[in-house]
Length: 546
Ligand code: DHE
Image (cartoon, rainbow, N blue to C red; front, side):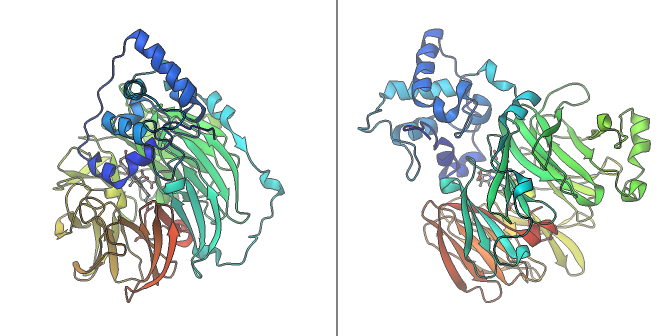
């Protein structure tokens, strides 16, 4: 890290709750047109002040890529504010201060303009680039295969601390730290565990994928799979990792053993129109990845294994190989050249936020600007229902449970203060539970009578609601750190304790007794965001994210 990793904290500021509150309504920033002379001057400023962290051509390095494509949802005045005032508890200096690197208002404005200027050179990230970016920190074969500490390996947590780009490995029985390590900049989406729980994979918004060996408490290898990444998913057998990207428009499939790229698939619909990839998911009973596409009306299914042969696909309307033949796509997964075929599912609308029923037969999807959710049967490729969803439901954070003998699905909403509860048999909305503001995350556990949800946005963002799953009523509203954003919970393996984040640079991890709702421990942390229990995640527990 250099003396002035200029703009390094731009993302952090933009991810702060006040900014996040604007995401829903933020209009994409307009492309900036600078004269050639202005561009040359701004480029020089960038090279002198920003390049060491943000990379040549603004492609990102330890700091994020600074391109209009990934700043599109940020307002330019926010960028100016961060460049001018810096960011507490990061290495980002205030450039309007009396520091040795003070810039004038005009220079700051021109830098902000510059990062919103298209850069031709920067949009490509090839297989060769991916391979060249690989960093091997440790030789995996030389590391012990047993955990080098004493703990229930199924009841460990990874807690991501966005505040200083770190993660904590936490013992879920004692709530003591086993490790704290640096991560890449601005992780997003849930880290994914290998099926045995030994390794955890992280994705940063700037395309870096990191593999951490929990048994040895070491980051063993890293690779940059793309310029701007959304999230990752891991196959059932733990062999493959799929990376969904905005920039370039593609998915990258990595071999998890050494993070080498196996295949890059350009995200284009059947007519050749390119699309950003909103998110990628694993569908365990289907042995396939599901890909959400932001700009075209298609959903993709990518079978990654022939394991179990046709039997594996007995839930499908027909064997995918028959379908492959009929539709002319190749799918002999035993042949390397035909691995990871794309099965296209056409949709009526753009769908980019997903949830799946527990059997992974139906997909529930919404478009960010649509007022309806769609239910698509993945086997028949047909729409089976529309759900009248308003606001901006965050389906990806939804959970399911059994309510009065039937499976229900509940989703938070990042635009309206409500939780929508849906009957998964007939797709009717059973109830809208009014909350004190829009929320981001929701969690429960099969052994808990409660579901927890945060109020991420607005004046009540320090509150968390506890909902009784049998009555669909809020039974308690907690404010663990008044004035500070409380968000995202996760349960221990046995469901007895709940871990909650106080999402603040001087934040905390708070442990609650899941039954009495009393606080049992508080641990200071730097803006803890998501936390992930090994057992709940590798078993795809219904109350947690998948
Ligand atoms: Fe997320 C998960 C999409 C903004 C923190 N977020 C996810 C997932 C999706 C998603 C599709 C599930 C993928 C997975 O876990 O593998 N998030 C989006 C958006 O579309 C949105 C609204 C805007 C964007 O451009 O990204 C968005 N998300 C945010 C934030 O601003 C948050 C609060 C701060 C941040 O880190 O960027 C945020 N998202 C998270 C977290 C998870 C997540 C912590 C994992 C939750 C989990 O429990 O698994």
